[in-house]
Length: 461
Length: 120
Image (tube, rainbow over all chains, first blue to last red; front, side):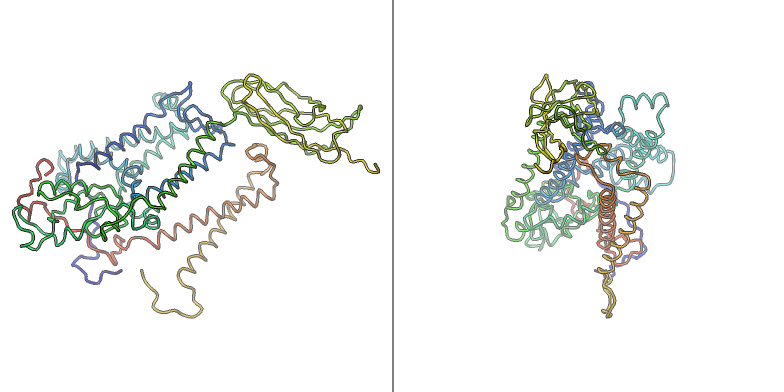
């Protein structure tokens, strides 16, 4: 794919810096909403408390995740796996449906870059002013504007790093720690680290991340098909492009409807020309649609020279967005999400395992009883204390001897020594005992486990 | 992409070399990782942490640990090769095979009737 024609470009020319022009319109508004909602959630959530606990807190040292009033334990790993499957499947679903929606509206790279560009536009002005400022010599105005922008960027980055760490370490204590300069070394390190990453990605790297570093950009073509909604330039309608007066007769002049104003290139955050067709650099931000629609309005042409459409629709004027692939992805997504939600809301906040003492076989006691020793590992995953009953379901003659009563505080993990005395009549060899634990104050909190008991084998009978 | 001029008998194709390198390097990385992790961590401690509902023997823990690291390394190396091989032909520092950047002009230049108004 070497460009042999050599269109006059020097091989050693610097890659031009991209100054995206500000754009207004339907999709720009959508992105503003997405930015406010997503960043609003990110910055606010750690400050909200539910039931006296931070609404979202990943307490790594305690190995517990608090999410919206629910507590997740390491044993709830399955929900994390389900969450990741859901995320992956959603990406497939939305990519097959409408291309890189994620990139244009929800990716943190886009969202933070957008905010950084807002700051830039606010301080330095829109595209032409920024280009002019960069070209101008360093004078008081340039120094003031550049340093104000940098200061705001650094402030925003620092706040982002702080908030991020606030998801892992209670944010109110963290804030107090910063105020009194008594932050621990790890918190300090991660705050600076994430602040730095935000600054680097959103202020400095920007579209380079999408172009060179993001694997999704390379994979997306595998998730596309000819009915995927993509942002396309209507070549048949637009070409041949060229400048004109509003009153010009297009047929007479042999022109299409593209007036070649290059505004679609100027608004593009990755600096491509959408008229060259679908390119992997395109993050589907739809800025070109917005700006082209405005130009079409001003020229009194119908909108949609650049629009969301499918390859099928463009070529054959047909196409169906709802297709088996979409339905299968959608159905799978629905099943997994509802299953996860059902599982999460129907979790039994009790976990118990009976682990047989590895070193002992069994002990014969007077009265034809056989004693097996276990360690009961029991966790009260609820946020209130409970007392539990322990019963052997399939043998009511078994005596249970506990080293301490089965009373557990909220979120308590206990290891309790259990002796089960089983009558010889229960059988020989390995016997399975079905044991149930049930909270006394809430019968719905119950858990069944199977305990393996060793019994003497008597020969010659 | 530089296509190889002709196939030499006995020489590996680029893809074959890529796969071979990825697998071998991942294996080495996983070996080193397993060695370090289990020198510090006793798998029996995992049983005491009581995350799994069953007791895992040391041997199984070592094997699973190695396989896990191997898979993670394979994913990392494989993706790296993929990203490098499918990288953009435009914008490399060397400039080889670069397309010129899209042309940008003043919108009103050839379109005197286009009134940009407040977003001029």
